[in-house]
Length: 276
Image (cartoon, rainbow, N blue to C red):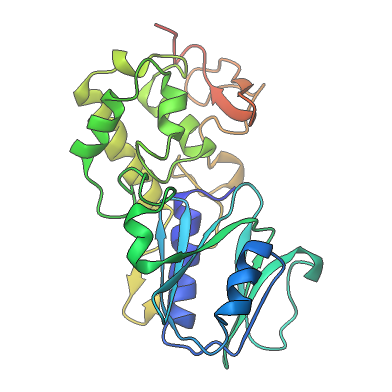
């Protein structure tokens, strides 16, 4: 499930491989991208840089054009050497970018658009994002956005990318457990100090799942996401995906539910996270 750490790692890998490369082939099955490619071909442009902003991946081409993609639940970017066998079926490809050395493929990515670089600051998607937890995070700005979020519950506010960018269902559930906060606690009931602790914890968890650069180059973390610090794959998360199993701290059965039209999942321990 792509969250901020997944997109950060994908952008970093693409940046390392593609930055400065000339695009020799561009294909897409998405009409909104094909229209611009027909009038202003992507082939022949240079890839200037690739970066992440929250759960969005931004690929900047020469000519001040940016490709913004969002993975949703099942999307992913892969990168291959020319001629290398793909790990996903060709029928799932939505975007193909080829250079002399690499082939970058976006599988099952439907949320994609071209944005003019000079219009990015007013783009209705990117411009409304809150501070990026894996970027130049401004805790004061994020806290101000929390306070403007009204009477919503914690599980709603943590997922709101306009408040903080980068969190999804996994980190939402894990953060609430580590903070001892019930998902239905009104965000307004949580004081500033505690919110600041939640933000620091969120940054810590995300960063722990993103490998740092080494002297020999950027190393990409390929393992399973962890919040417990345990190496055993079955022990890697506190509550997420563990409905019906005993809490790792108190033994209470972990609860689970789905919320809203999007059926966003939430896991919590009724004992460690009592409803106020």
